[in-house]
Image (cartoon, rainbow, N blue to C red; front, side):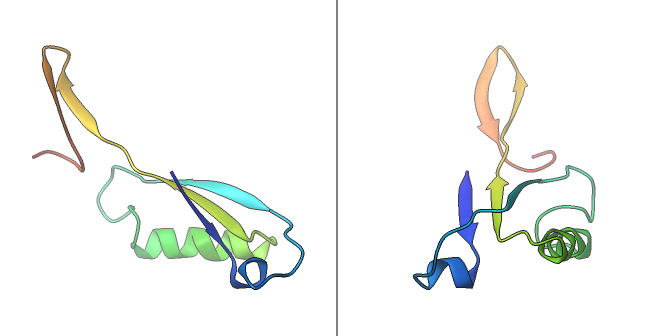
Length: 74
């Protein structure tokens, strides 16, 4: 998990955390870096959010195949 403070919080001022968890969508065009994600970040900022936790996911194909991979498919 990665925590990213807003610039004002990182500048040495009083730290007030107003955050949200941002999960990656496993659907085309909805992941981190997409226009949909940019809109979500703007909505969080619009209500006063100044921190976002970003969580990456890995996928295991089956319990008898212990390897993991990131993203959809291989």
